[in-house]
Image 1 (cartoon, rainbow, N blue to C red):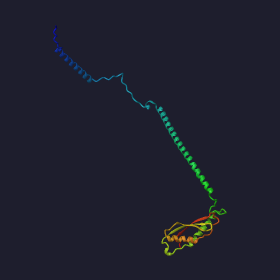
Image 2: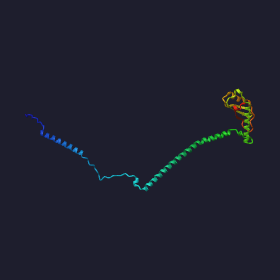
Image 3: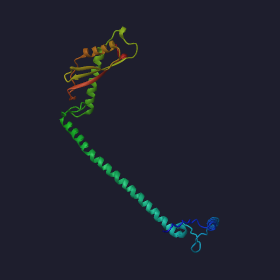
Image 4: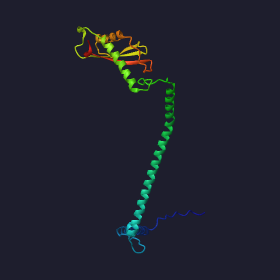
Length: 237
């Protein structure tokens, strides 16, 4: 019967462990020293061949004066040509806009002309008031002036106002009358009032008292005539 063998411990040699520790410490110090040396020493730049410099120059420095002058002439010609083209385009656009506006207005103008012609055709064929049968313009005007003066003189002869009602200052009233061909008073109205009712009414009574008037002159072809009669206070009787 075999007895069990006692267990052996493998703790190693104390001297060997110490040596390994010092060796590891030495290696660490060596690595740190190399790292410090590499940091303190500047790295030499890598160069490939000799150094050279490049200077930027303008085209004028390379081109001759004659070539520069020719280039400037070309640029001026190009700019002037562009300006002419732009002006031509603007002028063409303005001309087109004017033509379009004229085309739009043409129908309206034609309609207006047509309406005027139709209106003239529908009006009765009447001779001018101042032209007589013989075609004498001067004679017709003279006859009308004489008739108007006669009407106003007749009305003024029938115009009166008591002294107590006369205005203290210069006053004016204008009455418009319409007389038919036979001399009848067709219409009477105030064209301008003086502001004095008594004064205005006296002028109105004078016109009514003077009617009827003589027939219109034969040279006058219309059916009625309108006359404005002025009543200034200076002519009051």
